[in-house]
Length: 470
Image (cartoon, rainbow, N blue to C red; front, side, top):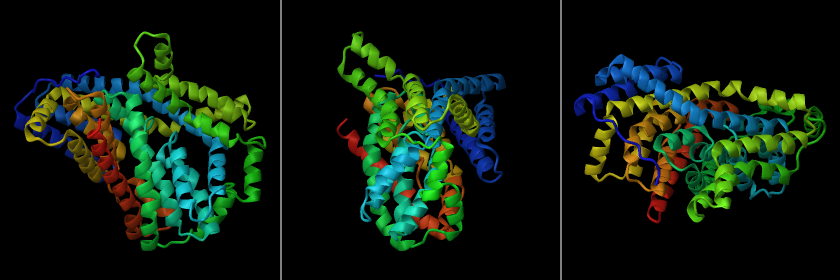
């Protein structure tokens, strides 16, 4: 059993607190969608408005926001930074290319969508969605051209792998924030997240792509051919140029795969120790320490410096530059995540959580279904999976009282599933996919948006199925 989130006593009447929460969320939605304000500023202003409408003193509101901001940044910030470092090493060393080459090169035409789904999942394990997409696009173009398949038939499975990992599996920001806010066990959530992600990727990727490829039969855009070759995408000249930049070498497939899976294995071993071993024994202590997320990711980054960077012929100065370049792109993500923690804490301190918890207890509505629905609504309104996750987690934080370890992890995954629902025109990812794939808005909705919806609904279905046996 985890530490229990205690809801604050209501600061005002239930009607006023519900109004405060709704007005605060509405302000965030309007600022992000209509005024195009950065989510960090939107979440900050939304938090202040919630406190003001709820009747909290401004000093107390600022204190609540600061506490949530600091707690979230301290617990999640370092993990996101380490994950970004690891992903950058994987990309710059050529390790990601090695995974792609090996899996795709050994697949027949019929098996290519399944290979691309596996590639997307493996690349998506340590990398943010946007980085993984940019990395995989040249490969998707080339595989589609060589195989004669639609870019949708090849690309949707890869996108499904990337997106599902982003929504379900730490150390991605969304799952990490939900784990922190709901006081879930990271190892258990990681294990259940992978268990749910695998069949979800299969259904939303290769299976769905068979239908989406008929609805949207698009050839790879020719305008990307030159850019692809210039970036060193799998033509002989491009590959040689990329290898020359890395000292002419790339890490082997086995070494790369072992490095990618290292932090996952360490965290799963910690979960195993928590369940099976007696606390205080030597083996338990070792596994518990090694599987602590910060330690596991730190070990993975240090190991990757040798197994990926060293094996690729990168010298110390090159590795240092790679690690330095990994951090600036995630500054915005860190601020959004931390501000989401501040918004969550403001909601908790007004006491709205206790009212929601009492309502859920008396309504008979499944907490898992409620978590999914709240995340879906915020996702549709803001277009941001991360904002949907952090906001929904804040609203639902008081509901974990009395939940078992497994149920709390399933709630995290239900929120993650809801945060992926129907990406549309207010989501930056929607436009990224549209432009890279050369699609119209309608074609993007019939392929990418529906794929995201399949991931969300399948994720919820598997969460509810696991809830019957956990």
